[in-house]
View 1: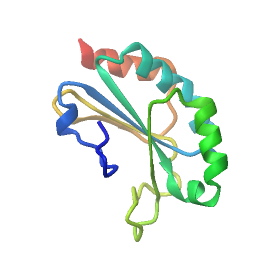
View 2: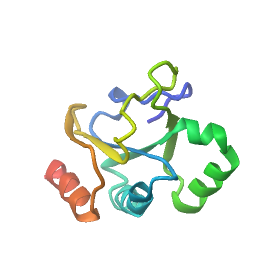
View 3: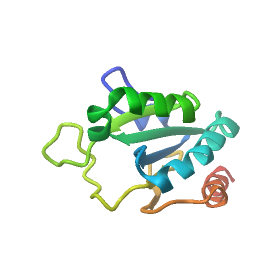
View 4: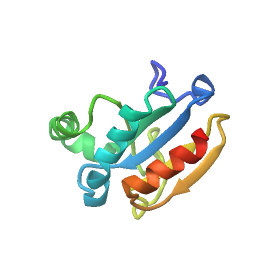
Length: 133
């Protein structure tokens, strides 16, 4: 669940697997992964919360272009914006080489995997299945 102030509440999602995907529209491997996250969000909608965290500076530079891109590729799941500038209030401070990155949080709110590279759909699905078992 994303709260009205734009924060992510791990506590309110306890009992569900949370998948955080850090990406931006100009990242080819990031865009390639989008269908995988959409598929997981649809197939496991009762067990998994997928949250796409888009790099904010690109959005601030071209909000209409980014919004149009997201609307055409992302099936209405949660998208929030954060930037990689530690001075910014929207900072995620991953480092410029960290896209795409995925963090999977288990049903108890504990980080299960932090994956600093692109995933295949099979890899993503295997991680989810391991937590559901």
